[in-house]
Image 1: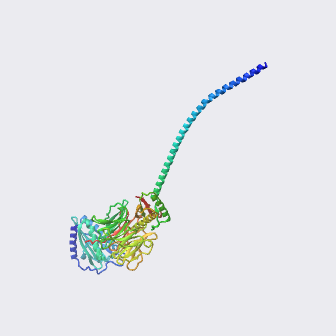
Image 2: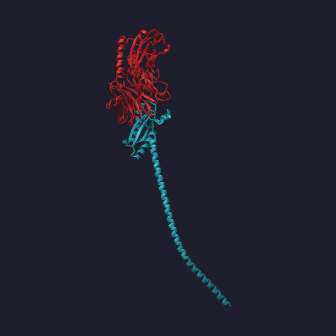
Image 3: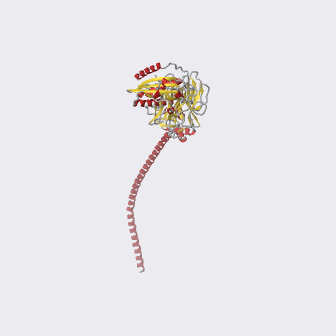
Length: 194
Length: 443
C-alpha cells in the first residue's frame, strides 16, 4: 500500500511537471508574435517621431525666418530711425555765431557715420538764423553756419561732392514765436536729402 | 499822355511869363538848421471852383486834401487847421492882388497856398499858387491841365515846385519806394509812390524775394530771389522785359547800384568767403572790393560814389565800415554794441543811418561820418523791432520797417530827426526792406 502511495505521488509530480512544460512551451509561442508586434510599433513610433521632428524643424525654420524677418524689420526700422534722426536732428548754434559746440560736433560725427553708411546719398545743408538781426547779415550768417557743418563733415571724410549748402537766413523759422526757446530752435543747420 | 505834357508845358509857359522873374533864392524859407523840429506853418485854402458843378466841387475837395497830405508828408511843413483862418480866398479871390496877407500873418502862417479848379468835359485845370505871407510875394504859380485821374499827379508836380522853391531840391514827390511784402507765404517785391499810395506787385516768383535796390535812373531794380533754390541777384528793368541773373556758385546777395552809373556791388560767396564785388548790370565781375575774414555784406555807395559803407564781421561781430574807393583805406564807423548792420547814406553824404542792437532791442541810429567821428543818435526806441532804414531823396525823411503794431512788420516813415513816426501804408501781410528811389524830374 505504501509503495502505491509513493507511485501516485510520483505520477502527480510528473503530471504537474508535464503541465508546467506545456505551459512553458505555450508561453514561448505567444511571446514571439508579441515581439514582432513591438517592432512594428517601434517603426511607427520612429516615423511619427520623424514626422514630429520634421514639423518641429519646420516650425523652427519658420521661427528662424520670423526672427530673421523681425531682425530685418528691426534693422530696417533702425535704419529708418537713423535716417529720420539724420534728417530731423538739427545742429544748433549760439546767437550770432557759426561756431560748432561740442554737442554740435558730436551730432555731426553721427551724421558723418550715417553718410558713410549711405554712400549713395547727397544732401543739402541748410543754414538758418533766428529772426533777430537784419535780413542780409542773417543770410550771410546762415551760410557760415552751413559752411561750418560742411567743413567738419569733409574733415571727417565725407566727400565734398555730396554736400551742398544753402542759406535761408531768417526766412524759414521752425517756430515763429518771439521767445528764447523759439530762437534757439531756429538757429540751426538742417539736413535735407537731395 | 503826350497831349497832357504839351498842355502842361503850354500852361507852364503862360504862367512863367506872367510871374516876375525875381525868384533868386535870397531868403531861407526853411530853417536849414532844424527844419524838422521847427516846422514851417503853411495854410492851404479851400479850392475856388470856377464853374461850380458837382464834379468840380468834389475834385476840388479831393485836390485840396491831396495837397495838404503831400505838404504834411514832407516833414518840414506844418499844414494849419482851417478853423483858424480869417479869410476865405475860395470866395474872395486866389490871386496876388486879392489876398490880404495880414489875415495870414495874423494867424502865424508864413506860407499860403491857394488853389482853383476849373473842370469841363472831363478836363481839369488846376491853378495853384504859393505865397510868402510876411514878404507878401507870390513864390510859385502854376497852371496844370489834365484828366480827372491825373489830379494827384498835377498836385504832386506843384508840390515838387514848392519844395524846389523852399529847399532847393524837388523833394520826395517824384520818388517811389520799393519794398518786400509777404503774399501767400511767399515774399515778393512791390513798388509804391513816395507816400505809400498805389502799391504794385513787381515780381511773381512765388518764392522768397528780398533786398530791392533802385538804380540811380530808376529804370532798374536789383533784388535777391530764391528762384533757383538759393539766393541769387536779379537785375530787372522796371518797364521792359530785360534783365540778368547773378548766380555764381554759393550765395549772391545784398545788391547796391552805384549813384551815377549802371554798375552794382553785391556780396558773392563763390570763393568760399563772403566778399563784396563790383559788377556790370549783366552780372560780370569788374573787381573785388573787400578782402577780409568773416562776412562782408550790405554795400552802400556814398552819394558821390567815392566811398562804400558796408557791414563786416571781421572783428568777430557785425560792425559798419567805410572804404575809400580811391585810396582803398578802410575805417570802422561803429564802436557801440556788438551788432551794427544795414548802413544807409543820407543824400548829402554826411550821415549814415543804420541798425543796431542794444540791450536786446533792435533800433535805428544815425551817425555823422566824414566830419570827425560822431556819436550814434537813436532815431527809434521802445517800440518793437526797427530795421531797414532808407533815406528819402531830399534827406528829410527815413522809411523803415517796424514791428511796433501787433508784432507784425510794417513800413513806417519818420523825419531824419526821428520825429513824426507814422505808418507809410496799410497792406495785408508783412512788409520790409524799403528802398527809396531818387526823385524823378517831374517835367
